[in-house]
Length: 553
Picture 1 (cartoon, helix red, strand yellow):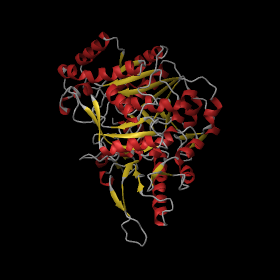
Picture 2 (cartoon, one colour):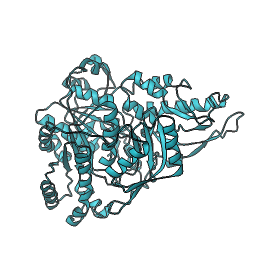
Picture 3 (cartoon, helix red, strand yellow):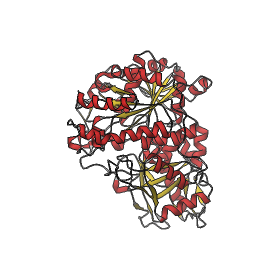
Picture 4 (cartoon, helix red, strand yellow):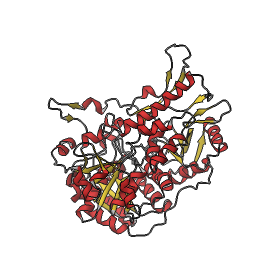
């Protein structure tokens, strides 16, 4: 059966029953049908003095184009923990319509480990991302309206972009205001995908509604003739934006196919944004359970680095365990095995590609100084010889590993790793950030590039150098950096899979996201508005005569 058929044939519990498992009262739920609900912020307030549960971060090896199953493994672990009698909860990101209709498909797990209702979660869900799109574009509309009526604030340059939650490369750069109407001012604009919008980052990093309004007001819209920033609060836009986001800031409660509670909230990509679910959801989950399983997007050089250096820094969090998801196919892929042949047995490919896995382990264990376990997400194409080879090599290095078979067996296929996680979570760790707040922006970038990516040095365009200088002159050099680069390589070249040669990271542009509280660093040719593949997943998505959705995977 397909994932959607498995999900559809599984009987779900009512969301009120799921809430009872984590002691959430009905009065603190806002129901979105039978199986979805918003959780009131009062839930956290009622439990703020309660001891936090253990925080488990799931990250991964550098991925193949279709991903390595971090979400699938995350769900399996949460279900596995419940199988061994532990009180666990998931804290995941919301899927974006871009991948759903693009190349990767949905983001609700697969096989017997899924969050549900999968069609709803993968599509409009509770409308959070739509609300963020509306808030973002309201701000764009107010900027151009202000300029139309005289430009009292003196916009010389507008840096705020419009957004939409679909992949559309045609919108990366556009000309607006071409109607020819009197007083209308044409200008160059562009679109980001909503999950890369600063609004998404702000929602995910806000503590509460008050903090949200303040962060929205701090958004830099552009600069005047004196190169001084113009803020959203100058346009008196943050109140209206907060109104659009008043429900979107509340976490969503759903469930796994095995009825484990799942809080799903926020959805920034990790290659072009900061890649973590919301601070509100994570902190709430830690008050509601003994073990919280969360994940950060793409490989550990992206999602995990940003989770640790940005989210943990701002929210004062520290993971107790890092689960590093690996697949046999990804190791072979990074060993130079052709994409069409990575499902064939190839020990030589494993020998060449395992360095990618070792580098991620070294970063997490020796740079960030955290407790790490490798989760081998087993595929049907994996051979016993390949699995034994990987296990033996990791055992020789005293690196714990567990074979996860959640896709085929559900939570039962993750009881081994669940047991190992409970033991590892009790071990001490000495968590360290990769850079310090007081480091210059260039020093922060270099530390991530050299320590995490393994680059020799960093090269900057003249524009990037000028912007870094301007940001530091404005007094914002203490902010963390969010490096946007390809997910397929430690380098900024997606074709450099093995990363055997010396390479530099190439910074072409820098953007100050003051509302979110970080500096976006654009490396290589990464785009903040993705494009569709030659044959998008949308071609296979349909609805039958009975109203059943088909083709989402």
